[in-house]
Length: 98
Image 1 (cartoon, helix red, strand yellow):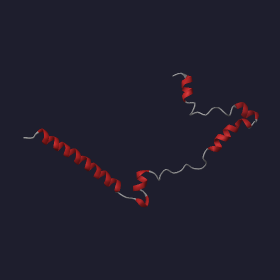
Image 2 (cartoon, helix red, strand yellow; image 1 turned 120 degrees about the vertical axis):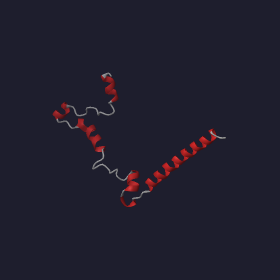
Image 3 (cartoon, helix red, strand yellow; image 1 turned 90 degrees about the vertical axis):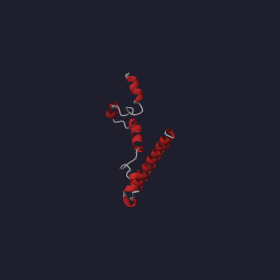
Image 4 (cartoon, one colour; image 1 turned 180 degrees about the vertical axis):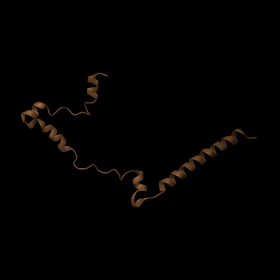
């Protein structure tokens, strides 16, 4: 891959150089305004917890703990297995009718 192609593809991921050495050494703060503005828009504090989402949190953790998903899984697999077995049984009788 060419360097320009890689640079173009990563352009959205890597921020442009805002703080150049000449701006930092000269003491001008006005050149850093876009950088300060960017960081001021970012959320502050710890990241929100994602522990309260999903099937595990809904059915297995906390005061709502239940075994319903396991029962549904067992019942669903038994139903699918019975359906496949029944269809195979019908195919057997169709092909071997006397």
